[in-house]
Image (cartoon, rainbow, N blue to C red; front, side, top):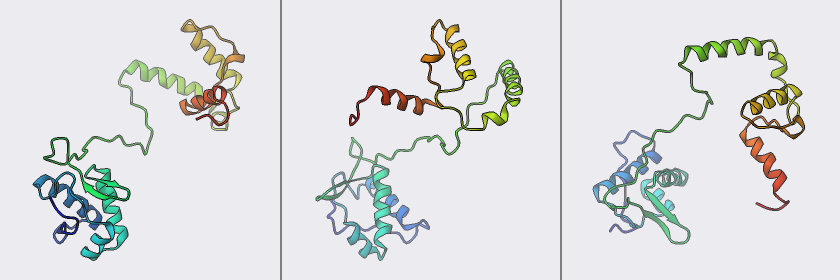
Length: 186
């Protein structure tokens, strides 16, 4: 077990920003057995002083290591190395992340669907300018008529007065919760 004061990463050959090099060193030392689950890590200030780095750099490194699941911090107790369930290696989470910087729908591969989409776009194109404006709360008469047709094809009877058209799921859930929750309820 490594003591709090003795763990010191070698950052001389990494060529990476110091905060990433520190997080990588924690991962490597856990993999190699130089750190074990539960080992006390140096305080951020102590490690910054030992390595001659700015405190915020070490704080960022610990934040990155915590994000990767390499360490666990306990308020008032300190920061501790964290190994996986078997205790032999790090639980580094390598997974495919979806890029949510752009919200793009899947591209259809069915030629018939693409043709129908083109026809619909030609129809929408006639109303393009009005569609770019803010819409009325609850939906327009045309929106409600379209929703009523869609619901009717599925055997659901409704009236325009009972429909609330929203710009998305988030707004719909917010509207429903606003109706059923009392003020102050969470």
